[in-house]
View: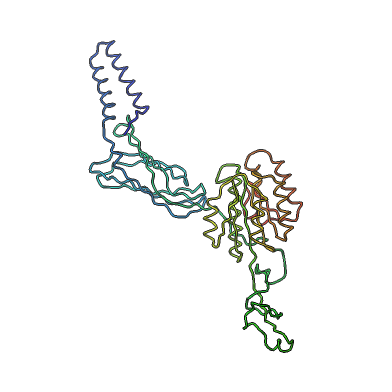
Length: 396
């Protein structure tokens, strides 16, 4: 294992050379003795065994955490050899958390030391491993050995969300079914709707014999089937700012909040993520929705393609929610897509992050684009840096 000299080693060697020069000039033997002692320290540092190949590192981390939450992470350093391993420096670089370094005393043969600390999860994503750098400079810190280990520690960092009390997924209505986020259609439910003429394929048990006798033809009972309005959530856009406090992270959090609200009120969800291509991710449960949003990435996107796919998913009377930043696609293209989706009879909600408030310095352009979006019939919610997510989503 390659051992590298440290700056301290170079300073010590330079000091030894100065002592030798001074001893030669002054003809003082004791200076040569001091110089020999200095060089002995350097040589000892480079021959002292560090035994890093006998080190095994493991990591314990929760399987699922949320962006910004303090998370307990445990590192264990095990000596698999029969001799003591000297002092170590351990640098943990699991991408989900900020890098951290800890110092370990000597590890006895077949023994282990443990380090537990709280770290904030600051990067959204699905991570299965991270590098750990093991460094030893024993005994004097003049020669340093390094060994990089790939250590497993799977963790999914899901976006932050807020529990919305309300959100306009449906048009305002006094109908009880709309209050419950439901719409009724003719089908095979349990609530009686009426009768109609028999059609081939109808079940015989649905025939209303008394009415059929009066009418002189077969008539069947019809029932209402309550169908929950489908919601398509589209996430797209380029990022501005530094995650986790950035424009794209804000719309991912908005998508998570809206999606969880929709699921809580009984709406089936279709999630569309947009980068190099549009990907459809059906999310039947809260955890699935959050896990899939954990892997969403920023990038340029095509509003029309995303809107077309969402329209196929929700059919008529559904709701399409665009969660986008002001970067990554033309706002005029987004506006044209909104009109096309609305023309098909689908409700549209737009949640847009004003990217300029995260520091790219073109606020006037963003404001003008958002004002053009507001001129249509779509509901528009605007996210800005420093404002509460729930307040922005609830609107005025």
